[in-house]
Image 1 (tube, rainbow, N blue to C red):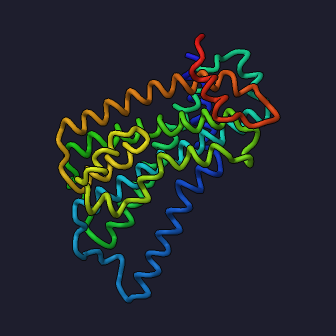
Image 2 (cartoon, rainbow, N blue to C red):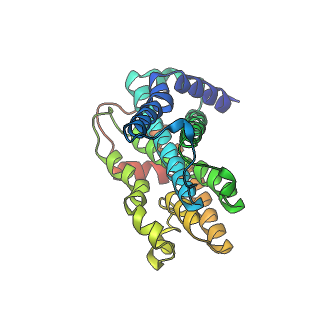
Image 3 (cartoon, rainbow, N blue to C red):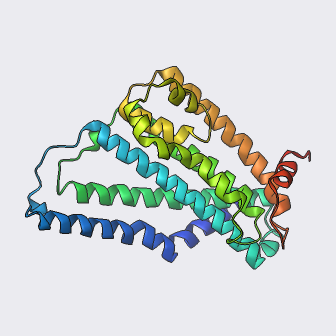
Length: 280
């Protein structure tokens, strides 16, 4: 019950924040206005619609990138939320009535729901804005994509958020950087190879990397967009990812319980590891 209360509070705080409004509405609005300006500058009428329909793989790739960015940004919100609570020392009062595990789980769940809402707003705005230029239909997505994309979004968010919560609990302030930057780049790394993944989705190294949990969400989303993946490969990657999420969240809860009350210095990676693997 405490976990749900924390999740509801975090969700409300996130949705009512200025950052959420900027990310969910104003930034897409700016892109839409720029697109309309370019269309009018070229002498085309956006209201006329028409044009060649987007190929199914283009829609799937765009949706995959959108979902991953939504999970990534929601996880970043978790990092800043943990650091903010720790810096204000409000967490000392909260922990008097809520366990560390419930506080961490509720924070991740509440911000994850806010991130899902943000992605839904992005998809809706992109659909209505894009359909003014070219025919767009989400019906071109395959059943496998429709089932796997939400699962990958949820598991990807939980994985990245757990990583960020672990590191954030060991940081003295938001400007200290250090391990957070290194950890944050691990799940994002596949996005640097988007072109290679789209052009060669069945390459051996890409298939192998799809089973490495931090890379699985982004790589599997993009590969599903451009090629047919054997069912055993999808199922195996999802099982490994789900197992990793469970283990990492347990690890993160142990670190969080110790590190959240430590002030004045950043925890080293060695200290985070020692707190996470200690026996209760």
